[in-house]
Amino acid sequence: MIDFSYSFEEFSSNLKAMEQVQNWEYTTIFGHLGNRDPASANMARVIEYFSDTYLNRKEAGQKEFCFSEIHEYIFEHKDFFFRRGLMTKKQDGFVSINSSLFRAVHYLFTSKAIQFTPRNVSARQIAKLAKDFERLDLGCIPVLKKILHSIISKKPSD
Image 1 (cartoon, rainbow, N blue to C red):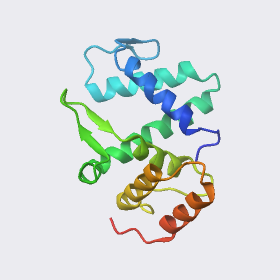
Image 2: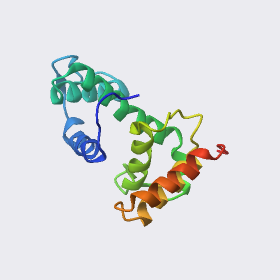
Image 3: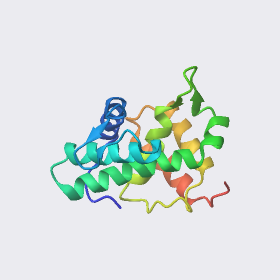
Image 4: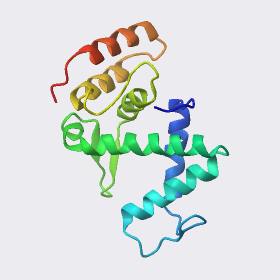
């Protein structure tokens, strides 16, 4: 569980920064990244970015871990999310992830009220929450809490 506040707006800001971060060829922590496999080079860039962005090392580490776990969860279930229209492949070959999907997974990973593990919340439940985020005005917190409670209390089926 994350000990620091990590709002969706902050997560979104980190996500937007990744557009630039993914072009880094050198990091002070890991050095030149040119010959590394893409996955380890990207991880090195993310670690460097969070270390540079947050002065508190514990906060940087927890937020980097949470950021990475959100992406990992989404990509573990990518086939399902593609079928649900929450992810699409763009013409340039890159994947586009619906912001409501990011919001749903972010909420579950950062909520203090929910002990989230991939075993207790299924991709189907996440997709439902993402679709609800699309439909709801986010100012409707009581409605959102009711929806979240109903999702969390159901047994995972996916």
